[in-house]
Length: 309
Length: 309
Image (cartoon, rainbow over all chains, first blue to last red; front, side, top):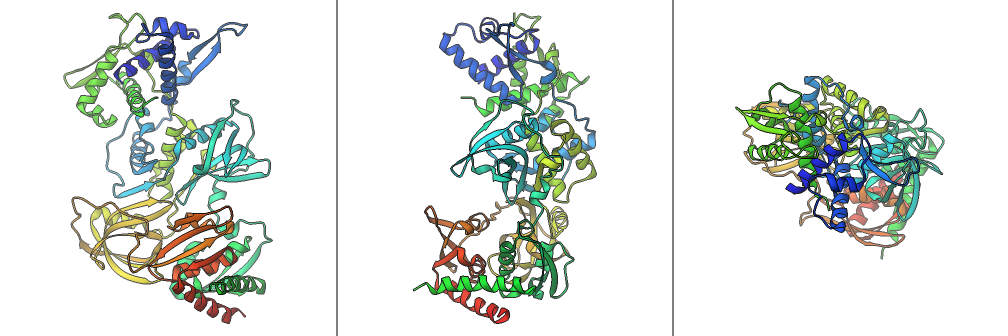
């Protein structure tokens, strides 16, 4: 590893300092650590080192060396290389450092790599007994985030189908990461850990995101609020035992005793399911068609039961 | 093959150099803390920097890096006056960390402005393209965190997850964390005389008692999944495509999978939870094994139909 670290540092310095793009031959003949290698060994090393540079966040580019575009050379623009300064003050740096240490993603501290690049961890007491685990993100998450910020189209396989998607946003909810994007059939949501064979398009700025798009509307709503059914207002009564629990889901003041609430429903299937999750402790009072829907669901469940020998 | 260790070592070196260059004096112990170095690692990285530089690699070409009177000195490294920009994954990790803490209700104004400033440089429309939903509907997370930090005993009214019952107990909170999108408090439960993990959203009411506790030196790892016991009710259920979401919300064991049906085994402390689940699934699921669950479905179902019909 020592050799690789030294070689990559030397390579990066060479690329940053060269006024014009350099060929792989230039690299081989100039940068310390590549000499005395067979062609094959050199190419293997160079490929690997380029990979390391990209993983470090170095914007390594391949550009034509002449107008005929016969030869190409590598270049790193120092302006593009440099981390933009977010202009954080001491207090903000400390707050971010604390947050970075608390939150885990893919089993490691999610923000610490970024904090190091931004000038290291600030010392200070924070929210110690607090912790957060954002589950598994895998590599796809970083690539998708990059694609969203550069407006690059993506393609992946999802449940056996290939999906071309214009990626609009990423949400974390209930322990999973989701991608929301536009497809030929409109906006869709995909679980990131089920995305396979992700390919990110070459061209940045290859789609426009609608102005009003807001990822938060995809996660903040309850299942019965997001549906294609004509909206209907249902009235439900919850027993005292569960009323506080229902009130939390509905975003209402927590009642001391039982609760009767009016709920706007645009997904009846989901609403019936939610009411039945309270067992006998909740009852839909109206309208009659919603009462009917609950009773029908119960009968369906009971009829399947009778089929058991 | 590129090892992650190589990448993280280089990343730290490329952040260390600009930090030191930017300062009159950089104290060794401050650097170690800020960048998470041991003394040995720091010395090794400085020695590495010292042998790298511009092509030619003569005395005037190499960077200078050494420790002098407890200060880190780096010179002749102007090409590294800035750290490399964040990779998309690093940017996402840090933004998500900040948003998680803000979303938990435990963020400070400093953290909120830090997240805003950071978004501006990595993803200007981050507030509508990235979201981490860790909303604490109970609003108890902050209180529990304070109690954990101050080692205060807390009295809670708790509605169990596996069993539909409400209990009152005194707990000694050790930590408060969010995982799989839900908040938990982990600590010693005086009612059961052992360590337990409680879902914060299931805490109906709490009181901070005027009594402190000794926090053990070594706190056991919290378990958030359901751990089956020999008294459990076990049932086997067939789910069709419309009920597959159950796999994401309940800790179930998949027994068999075909194109149309997923067969699962479900463990719970009583029959109530699987019975309510089957009722809400209606025609999308079928109980295959578990007579007590079937019985309970019959009871609840009959009670509901008596109300609705």
